Length: 221
Image (tube, rainbow, N blue to C red; front, side, top):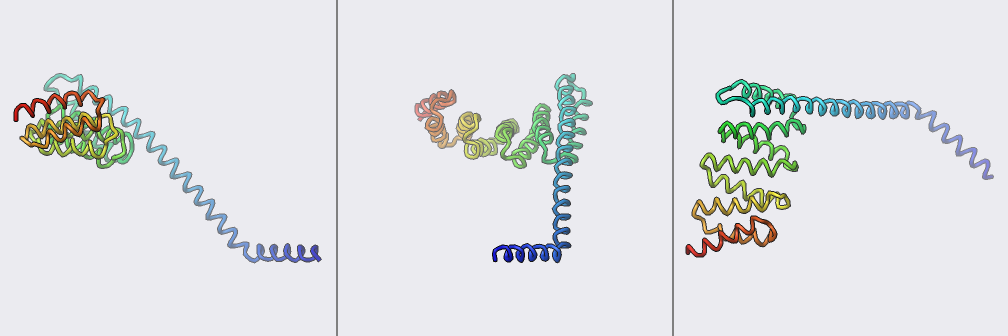
């Protein structure tokens, strides 16, 4: 009896496979296409990433040339701008582009084009918020805002670092810089910020400076 039942079951399975063979073949073909597509995409992405690194290496060489250029020599800076535009067009979203953004911020800062430097740094932080470069870019953007006389905008950026990147090594320094810029604005919040710095980062060297500022501000009152 069991043998007959097994034979019947095998027959049913064989019949079902025969009946649905086209569906099965089509499904297998679709699976193969999917796997091939994934492989192609992966290969393209890897190739693009490699090319972006190659472009970055060339870009860094141009950046070094600009650093070594004599004052008044505009050619290295122009070459750097051109190379960045190419990276921006061809490799958005890659590490190469991210690093180039940071270097462009440094370049524009060095050229005292502070608003453009802020744009470069801010773009990096917005497009790559989880990057290790993001808090440093925001800090440099804040410094550029200070250089440009925009103390309130600088304060906002220092505050953002302390709130969004509280685990970053830059957080204590950002808090101290926030207190310092608030002092410059005549804001009584400076003492609160300095106190917060001591509470959050009691072992930081910036905390020692903050405590000295608290003492001086209290004496001034």
